[in-house]
Image (cartoon, rainbow over all chains, first blue to last red; front, side, top):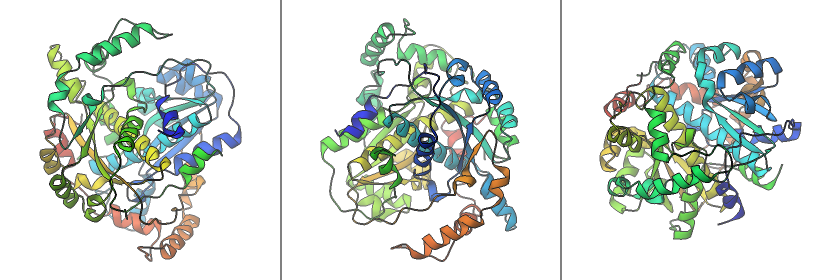
Length: 245
Length: 245
């Protein structure tokens, strides 16, 4: 395993940053990394908005529910799944938008955006910066969309905080390989057994340095999914012009 | 810009591979990289299926429309957005599934899966292997799902070919920074001008080593989106249990 991959295996999300801004060179490198990723049919269906205005950043931070570490990281980016460019091109060329607004195209833009963000995340970590994805901007997509003046055919997918870590947790133990990886077909049998991983994850949560809890991966997932989270996402996507069909 | 990021900027999708299998160590490293990425609330909502069966690989390759380079790469992986594990946990705990089947949760699983795949892609490139995302497995999601025996609450998002490149194209010029990156709000004004990029992209397509074309980014995007692609995706997702609500 080379150093590049070893570095990947040390990934933890950072939620405790020093209040140090990032240099223009660093930010440039992050954006270049993001823009170098793969893109489906090279549609490049994303935009990145860097939040430099203090008031705006505070407003967004409050929406995320992760205010302490969204306000004080080096930089906060919002990643927008974006088919607005193409909608304009289609309209200019007197074409219908049905091919742009269906589920397939929405998925293309979400995948493109995620891949670009992960390039930025790894670029940041290669410079010994820490990152945290902030799905919390989806807590109020309408408000975020208004604040960022997003046009139709766009969707604020997540934020990404990038900064100098003040502290870090231990690397979280992943699902066991047999729970997640298989050959030729879905791992129905191996999957049935999550017990081994339960033990591993329980031990992690009870022994990590901060935010210790008596829980396991399964318990934490049941708690997460038994709640209906962000029930307005589908309606918002429709307002943005996606037909979800 | 460090070497790690420089490497990212050399990314091109590879569609011409030597027929050389990948060693067990290499495949292990790729999978470890994928499993080390960030995950929303650590739900780890993906599975990876490695296609080692020759007949199955040929069947999948034919579906993708990219048969030559799906059949003959070192390895072909299918990335599955996967909430099946959590559905079982909820059922075992007598909980409703509405929190798992809504649009928000589907997005969480698509993002998790994409981020994991991009880790694998960059890990591959760090070992001087080439990769190509294969969205073409969505050409017939029902058939792919049947072949891979996918359970409910899963979605075959894309394939990833990884192998030893036989040849490579030049790096594609990305949208200009002003077309894609902005501060504090969506770049409405800067975006209006794609003309500069049109010139750059035209030159790229007409001068690259293989598959030269007289087209521009805008023309190629209009052609891509004026067609309604994969119109059955939404219906398939509903069959898989996602409510798209």
